[in-house]
Length: 159
Image 1 (cartoon, one colour):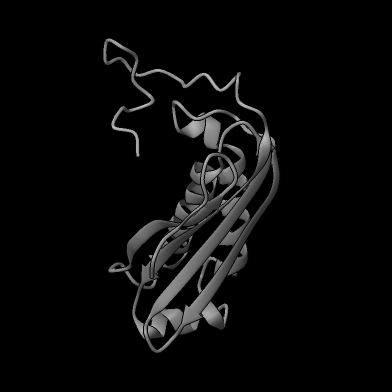
Image 2 (spheres, one colour):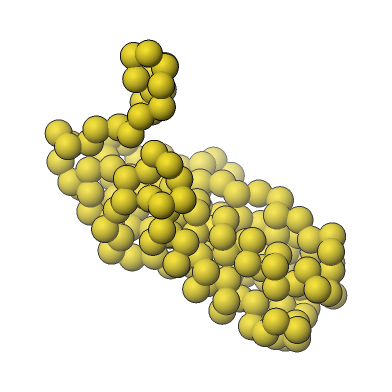
């Protein structure tokens, strides 16, 4: 792993990395977010019994929209031509969790990790927003990159 932070120039100032010399390759990244709530609130999510409507459908669309805007939200990210964004949710009622898994793909000279992480994050925040009216103690516990492929090296989180 490089010891140098790629988003800093020789004087230590933030900069966008120049990827013009890199060849486009197929890239894929998968990220996860976990939202914790009471089992009763998780049941309301499954039953579509929240005042704001279908939590999971709304979170899915929000995550996809967010991935497409990552270059606008994260200052030094390159805008990427996304070829696919998928957002799925799994609710474990007895555990009181909603787990979001977001996947992003592109063919580009730089990776899509930030797009997958942004999709998972915004989908999780959307779940929070949609259930806060029935439970204030909801927590977004985790946002993590699970895997990436393409580019210099593939990587997978050890679970």
